[in-house]
Amino acid sequence: MTLVDIVSTQGGTPRAFMFDPSGRYIFAANQRTNSIVTVAVDADSGRLTATGAKVDVTKPVCIQFATL
Image (cartoon, rainbow, N blue to C red; front, side, top):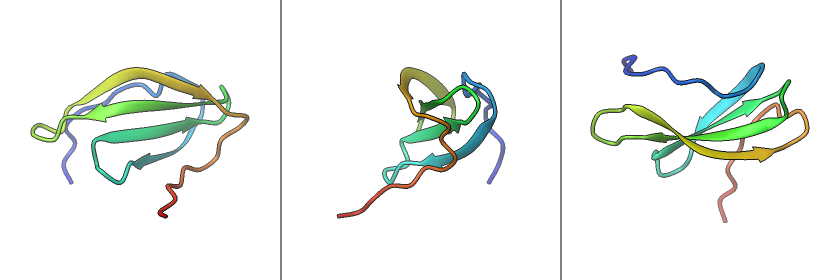
């Protein structure tokens, strides 16, 4: 892995992050500000873009995707 970009998690105390199964998004859990935000990942360049998508969750500490 190579550092390509840095973006804010738009919250306090980022506790965890995870790529979604497609690799197109990163989800970041902000424990102190009670939110999970979504960041888009450009497949070609690896550059990151804040999507503005945010969900309020009380003190998130991890992110896990379920497979059905």
